Amino acid sequence: MAIPNRYKFSKGNVILDLKPLCIRIADQLGIEPLDIKFEDLTDDSRLYIKENYVAISRKYENDYEECAKCIAHEYRHVFQIFYVCLFKNNRLKRLEKELQGVVNSSNMKNNGSNYTSQEIELDAFAFTKYYLETYESIPVINRMSGYDEIIDKYLYVNHTIM
Ligand SMILES: [Zn+2]
Image (cartoon, rainbow, N blue to C red; front, side, top):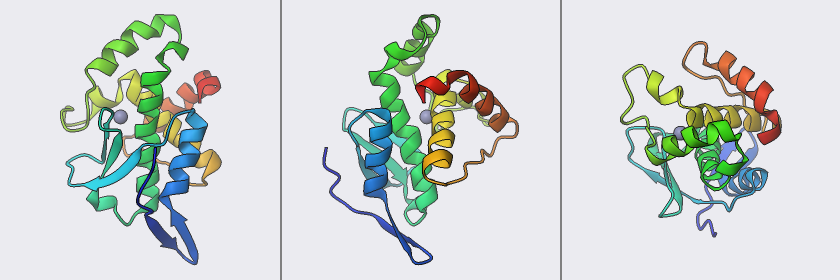
């Protein structure tokens, strides 16, 4: 899938480009890179699976690291949809149900607990942290206290599917 726009950012003297980042993340997951569009969103990012693109909030238009987090997170949801069979059988039914009725940050409870406690969300946040810290040198600290410890445990148990 073509990514028509090259969104470039400068960080010091380094020009950072979202297009090769999209390709690297997609390669890691074994999926096709989806297009990126900036839109007015109430949440950080959204996956439009049928329309084949990831929408990122305009507030991150000039923020490479936040864009990287959005792309890793939403691409992981694409991976989950295509590779749900990779997950352990006892988790499959629950995951399929969650994928059908995805709770996003626009309909979550105020504290976000019902949003991030879902296994698919935990998996997407865990992949984002693992991938960006390991391969892109982008530190990922979650705003919700205690969540990074849960992610570390999840990564320890599930490192083979990252
Ligand atoms: Zn998500």
